[in-house]
Length: 397
Image (cartoon, rainbow, N blue to C red):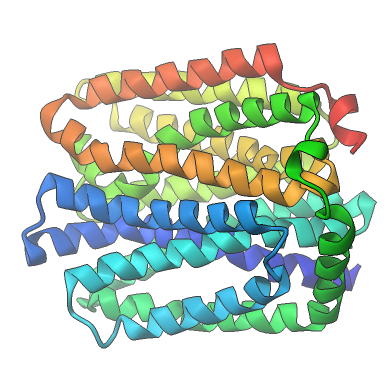
């Protein structure tokens, strides 16, 4: 079992770093906007560059899984992130920071499908579902770590760019935890390229698989658009709702802690309820918890706090399905491509929403944005009710 947790630790570095880069973008924008005199469109480009980098990386893996030596990506991605983190100390250019965020996303996006597939193929069957929930929980550790880093930056007036280099040790630790499995990854990759990917993709994808892919694209999109805006522009949203200074850090910190609590609880209940039930109840709870924000200027501050807590806990509980669903629904022959396509599609749509959000925030009321988020979550609920596969059909893979 110890080896299972070491395997999980190596794969969890990807979601951890993904969360750090996602959340840190919102804090960096608050300091970069006045420093570089950023317009709404430039700020949107900065928030979006990371997401488009993830999209490009995942597209590379999904499109070239037959030809790429995926074990090289699995071990070189943490090294690339380490080098980029350190390089930010030596450059004081917005264009470089923009390019660095894109490359961070590229490394993370290319590593996402590979690390998930390798973990699910190497771990024991009895540990798979719970192990995947641990992978998802590590995303929230990364988010909480980002908030801690920038909270310390505000207390001690430390440059955010310097603090961004502080987590450079993390990708090195991830690389070390992956080294014991290098030979296994190479053998898996060689076997996959010889046996699993010797034929065109059309020969492996059944009609059922394509329908499941379509469902998961809608599922992830409806889940990702509202939370992407909250994650990337959380500080700006807090200011629009009346929070500022330490209150903003407190509210965001509480929100991310409950993201993590919701995800951690799923470790205990993932095998006790059907996947479809968990998806439906969490979509409904997220939508209901956003509704009180429509009256943020007239209701108690604690109602707003508990609304964010309810949304965060529900989202955290649901996001474990982002890892569990694809690894249960898709056959191993197409799983890596499927996860790459899902990541690519959802990050592209989330990237568009992040790009336009600063414009909407400056031209529309926060209430209009919240109503749009509730509508998107309602769409996710309906699509899940109509098209989600049954647990029997998903676990048979």
